[in-house]
Image (cartoon, rainbow, N blue to C red):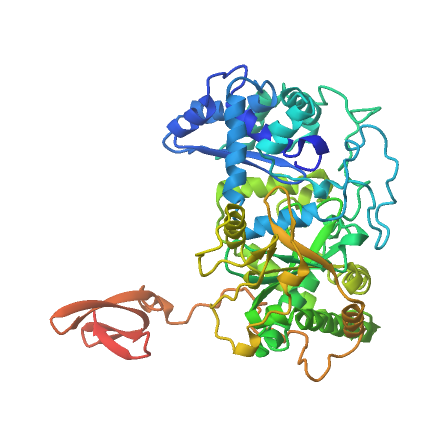
Length: 635
């Protein structure tokens, strides 16, 4: 994945992913693998996450010869035995990486993600992932312990582009292709890989074919790195010495960000310990359900009543940045109105009032099935989540084959911690009868705090990237005459707020609480060029949030409450007994469509046959239509 490469070659894993498709020693022709799959109606792709890279392909089993199916698997296996990793095509794939980077450069979510990585506070170039020594690593797993190392893998630019993979390395005398081959030999070995094959053959046949194709993949690294005394000992992850990603200087701060498109969003991020070991009860999902519910008494309903928000979501991400072996990021995302942008401190206060209410109910406890009062949130909330998860998994639609094998392969990751018998359902179901209240308490009281919070406020009220770029160009050209009506004024690199007219607003509310003119020139994230202002949240506001988050019921002005019970969660799944008259006629209790003449036209109406009878010698059925109208029809 994107975490292990050295800081001086950021994006190396992504580049390597592309390079494996350029041919192998056995199949050296350019795009021979792609051409074969396309000819047989198959597909293939790959993606690089933070801690793993996943390659996958699919080929139809019907309509193609069995020989071709296993040939596809054999060609695929050569990626991991004898790739070429060089040639003139390398520059082409470097351009492909650059193209992906440029394509995502205008995506606001991606820009925010990279800004969080860049500004997490780990400045300076670090040692290469333990290649020298592990000095400076703190104890992993201590409550609220933050990594104060000079560089955290979270801070890396995972995409990679021409700048990080060609321009900068060449300027520093680094041979990128040599490093690429060493990286491949150090990480691409059998005991560091997982393989999932789904095919309509006997398991013995699949196993025989897999062994035949993959037996020559080296079991251990081809070269030894990281001063590894015994390369055969493969830990679940090499990243545990790194702890929580955000440096203390990047917390209790607000980042005001210029978007590419018109939007107003608020993202609250708390860093928490890795959640991998909590797969049995998923306490983070438990809290996310409570904070993200949208019924009466929810955070969203309270914000909507004040005209501050249109939507919200809560939870940890699944992209490796928010869910890693080193940490997890618990986020609460709010889609704000223009009024909500100006009242962002109050929006955050509502969130902390809800957290304070959860703390209060946790301390109040509940009475368990044995009549004993137990510390924790009401048991019925967890029971509902467990029941819904069971129903969703049990009656899920048949999924796409490629997606299924991808999910299973990811679940088999050593650092994820799922036992073998749970790789199919461990990420979907809840297994214990009671949620892990110890972890819930730790998250609520020790991690979801104002001091551990990072605030990202992205709004076109501050301006937009395109307008800022145009204004800077005009300033450099000396064009002070005509300008676009949406363009901000620029004074020595300072932009003034733009008033978007997407929502009705009173004249008094046209002034934004944040004056970009007084704030000075924005900072710039170097990879995507995102403009932003960082500001420490004032002591007064921090104290207000701290007071709001105390274990107490919410104030009268904030009608916050736990979600109401869901009366529609099913608990019985037995089939109802057939009616006694069901055998009277095969159509009874069946759904049918009846052709009825409507004027000169005919129309088909859905209906249900409810009764059957013999009217003399003429059989008839009673049909009930959707509008509850019932009519007898002769057969």
